[in-house]
Length: 75
Image (cartoon, one colour):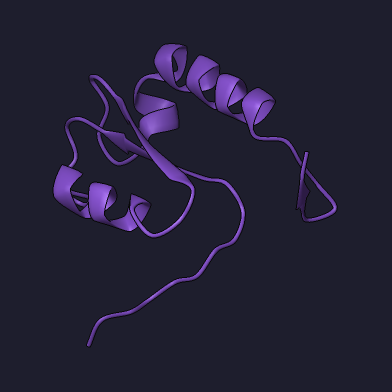
């Protein structure tokens, strides 16, 4: 049974290039229906923020600065 999620706000999917838990194909498929983006962090597994914080933190900060949501309304 397929599970469908409906999000109506910007969503960032971050995956480590070394993980098998979230294959690239699945992350890409998840990103299609809505305004989502997929980013990959090199030299990281499932714990992306711990495995490679030097790449993860700037990626997240940049995405947050571009995708501000205030009170549920895109700004």
